[in-house]
Picture 1: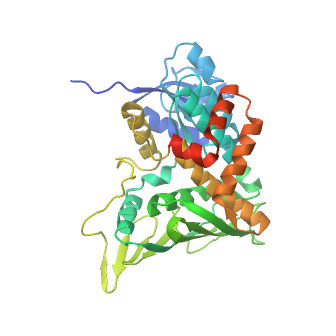
Picture 2: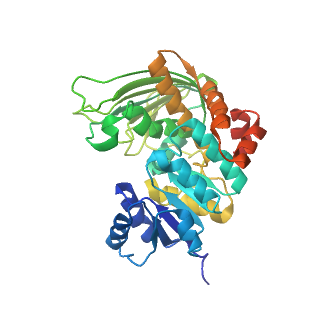
Picture 3: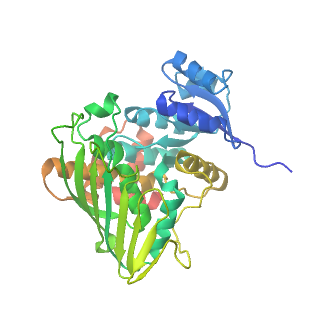
Length: 377
């Protein structure tokens, strides 16, 4: 008895992160790599040779590969954020499901366009929010359910990575390139969506970044929960994990997680590493055997085969992207920003700039961003 046929995939992007994805795809039994797209064909060929797949065809576009009858089912989009909208749109209208590296698009308005394009094409668009797939984060979420009514949550994030390249020149490198991970994890762990944010950002004199590498954001979530993110990308010494250090307090106690090891909770004098009876929320995604991008790929494949909605589906993931955009707007304006205001302003922009008549018509049919995101998800 044989299992389901492998999902035939094209990868777009052969750079540093592209190489990581190639290694994963070529080691995954449920995937058959049928093409690699990059504007630099020599780079693409070298990347394939490095994973022992020199015979896989290369091209400069998804359409070019599909026209050569590679018979792909899906695309992995590992291009730079500025290229996400064009590459994903092309793939969706080639009839391909898409798993995109985060952010799904560089702005909320372009992400709304992609959500509408996903609806028009009838194809799945999922973002690889890879840090949702840590088993210890899932355990942390289960502990939080047992805390009852929640009041406060926080993430402390302190690292000092020296990337070089585009991140060093960004206006808000921490918020735009990194904070979407804890923001998205907060939505997942708390089982709630954000309402508003007040954010301040700065750049210490010793920072090697051109833009603000430090930020504190206070989010109000549904139910009155306050979530505080305090982060720095230029803090040397006593560094946190890449997931940060978490604390959530509710009516029945407090749960903590260092971002790596097993979480713990305490109530009164009782402290344990795991709840007596693990609890889950109804909207929890299926547990995956892999973590980080392997977990995202596993859920993507499952969604294609079963029709289940994955946790990173574009309509839901746009809320995480809106958290980033709202935090940046708040930091720049010095005012509290409502998430719905960002969504609706972005919706108007999406309608104004959309070039595809089909996609614009779908956007117009929503009536508002909130209605479209709710119906689409």
